View 1 (cartoon, helix red, strand yellow):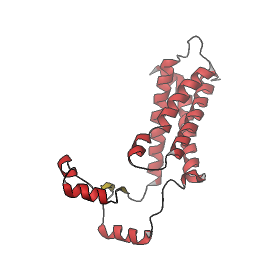
View 2: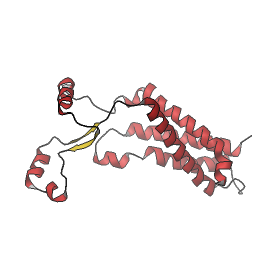
View 3: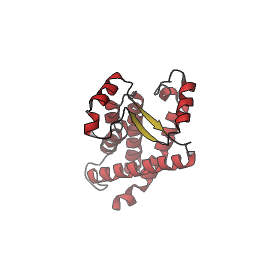
View 4: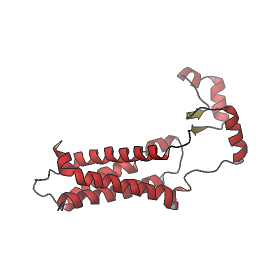
Length: 186
């Protein structure tokens, strides 16, 4: 837990800055507006979904509940004929709760990145400098934030370059915060 004493300021600053960057990226800047396409005849589609009274959850269609069902002739025909897709149904978002969860996510990931960087760059070690701390913490942060959804997107198609771009920016910014507040804490 020594790393928490050494890194409380970079962890706190990184968490706050990344939270505001994520708000900026998702609520202000336009690069995420094209992440999802609009369904043709959206109103009729939404009316149909309302009539089905589908509870909140994640759905895939067509859906097989077992391997044998998945390979059954009628399911294979249904899958081949299409359409195939994912449907996420969620309740009205609770913005304060979701914002708190976002802050918690950043706090946990930034703390973990701080711990790993602290192990790799102990504060009293020889050769500790701005670029070393920046490279290690920034690389870990880029891996954390830029690649977290890539594998999911391989299987379930979605534009991903915007999330990778956001993750690279998060990583570079967090690396700069850690390096600046680690090497120049006063």
